[in-house]
Image 1 (cartoon, rainbow, N blue to C red):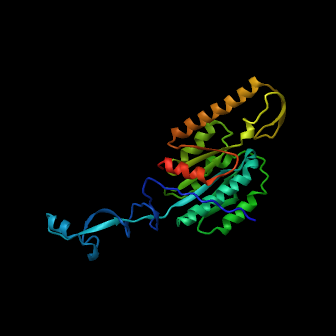
Image 2: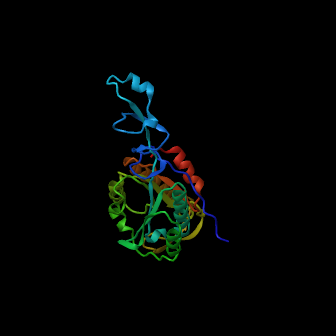
Image 3: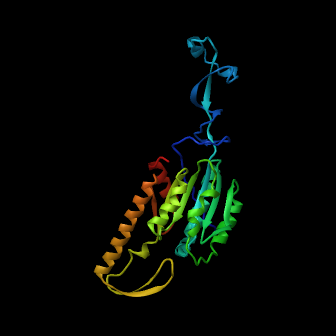
Length: 279
């Protein structure tokens, strides 16, 4: 039986720019329930919305009309790191992509996907649309990916996004330098970016106190055997915690609050994130 897709609810604190009606507060005036301002009848010729009280108080003795804030449509993109170190996380990434797509379509928004490997590959680009079938087909292809490179194209993905502000879920494990991360984030600052840093707990926490442990480098896939002991185990855990702090500080420098995920994907985690953050 196919696993059901979990949805999450997202919101943006700042008004959107789309001219198409949707579920999010927008900057356009039109059909809506949130009062925005008064305008002269000649500017907004809709007699049904004449405000008699405001018209009587108008010093120029003009009819004043209520205009309302129109809710707008939003574009949601998942930008995914498809480097070698992300191969083990592809099943969970597929669940996140399906969840984000379903959540966007339920809100009446558009959903798109950009996968980043060594170079921009159009087979991993899904333009923003309003259908689930292309997303399912993309996720099925993702499960067969055998990445053998670094995600160098992450720093060149900004021109593929819409010019107007959209919601971007940036999914990566962050196994690259902070200088490269800064180069990735700088062109994305005009959008509402949710950095999702995905680590597996067996990378650092589920280690024995004693014994021989075989480690595999996340990017090069080279193996190395070490004699594990309590001091070395604690040092590995502290290194990951220090890396978590460095990543969080780097993201916050660009006004982005990261979300750290471990192992499986759960939509409730994103629900809590959007309840706590104003994008």
